[in-house]
Amino acid sequence: MERINFWLNVFFATLFAAFFLFAWSSALKEGETCVNDKSCDSGLQCETCTENVTVPPRCIRIRPHNPLHKVSGLPFNRYSWLTTHNSFARMAHKSDTGAVLLAPMNQQDSVTVQLENGVRGLMLDMYDFEDDIWLCHSFHGRCFNYTAFQPAINVLKEVQAFLEANPTDIVTIIIEDYVTSQSGLTRIFKASGLGKFWFPVSRMPSNGTNWPTVDSMIEDNQRLVVFTTKSSKEASEGIAYVWRYFVENQYGSDGMKNGSCPNRAESASMNTSSRSLVLLNHFPDTPDLTEACKHNSAPLITMMNTCHDAAGKRWPNFISVDFYKRSDGEGPPAAVDFANGQLVCGCNNINSCRPKMTFGDCNTLEGSPAPAPTIEASTSTTTAAGRGFKRSFADSGSGQRLQFGWLMGTGLIIFSSSITGFITI
Image (cartoon, rainbow, N blue to C red; front, top):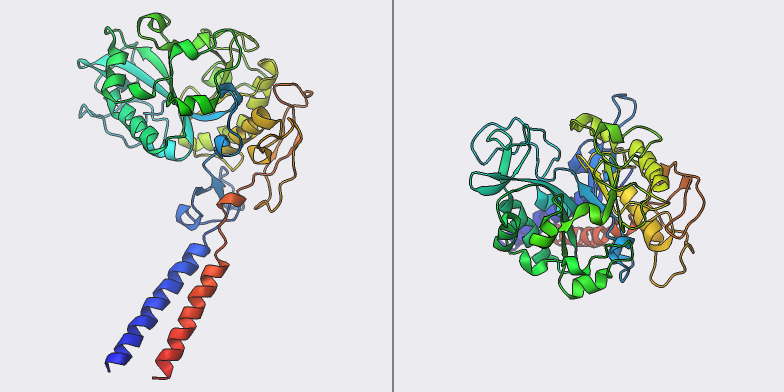
C-alpha cells in the first residue's frame, strides 16, 4: 500500500510539473494574438491601439535591447536611451502628503519597474516643499499638497538600489529644477547614497566633441549622469546645465506637428553642433493613457526621422515619452533599438551590430521571430552620424526566445515512466 501511495504521489507531482512546463512553454511570442498580459511571454504585454474589434491585440515588446550588451566601448553620446517624461508621476500613486492628487499622471509603474524594463533616462520635477525637496507638478510655479507626489529622496533611493544591483548600467537624470534652497539638490543626492556614482561635470565635453566611453564610466563607477535646468548650479553644486550639452525639440503638443521639429525655447537650435547630445520629446500637453498608444507608435517613428534631419543628421540619444509601455509594437523600444543601431554601427537595428564591425556593414539577422515591424523613415542620404532609412528592419528577440522542446520532452518521459511504474504495481 505504501508503494502504491508513493507512486501515486510521483504521478500527480509529475502531472503538475508537466502542466506547468506546458503553460510556461506555451506563452505567446512577440506579434502573436493575445487575450491579456499574462498570456504573453516575459518582457511583452498584450496591446492594441485600435477600437476596431476586428484587429485583435498582439503581444508587443516593452523593453528596448541594451546596446551595451551588443557593442560597448563607444562614447556615451554614441548610444540612445529610453527616457520617461515625469517619471515620478505614476498612475494610482497616492500623495505622501495624504491629500488627493489633482495632478497629471504620466507613467504606469514605479521608477524601479521602469529601470527594470530598460528605461535609462528619468525626467524629474523637483521643488522646495515642506522643508524638503519633493517631486511635484506645479500650479503657477508652486508645489501644493494636492500636486506633490513624494519626497525626491524616495525615488533617488530607487535609482541607488538599481545601480548597486546592476554594476554595468548607466542612468541619466534630467531635473526640471525649481529648488531654491541652498545646496538642496546636493544634500538629497548625498543622502540617497548616489554621490558615489556621480559623473563629474569636469568630464563632460561642452564643445560638441565625444563624451568619455561607457567602458570608462563603468570602470570608474561614475554611472549616474545628472542635469539641471538651472544654469547657476553647474558652478555652485557641480550639476551640469542641461542646455550646455543638449539640443532638445519643443515638448508638448506644439512639438508633435508633422514635418516640424523646432527646438524648445531654452535650447540651442537642433542643428547646433557644439552640443553633443540630442533629446527627442514626444508627448502631448496633457497625458492620455489611451491616446499614448497611438502617439508612441508610427507618429513617434515619423517624428524621430523629422528631428534627425533637423538635428544635422543626428539620431536622438534620449527618446522621452509618456506611458512608455503603450504602443502597437512599433513604439519606444523599436525607436530606441533603431536609433542605437544607427548610432553604434550604422544599421537599422542594434541587433545587427557586432564588435569591431565596419560602420554600415550590416549583417542579415537570421531566425528573427514574428514579422518585423516596418518603419517608414527619412530618405536622407547616409552621413557619418547615421543613415536615413525607408525599409523594414528585423526586430530580433531571438535572444529572449527560449526553446522548451527538450524540457517538455524530459517532462513527458518522466510522466510516461511514472505511469508505467504505477500500472505495473
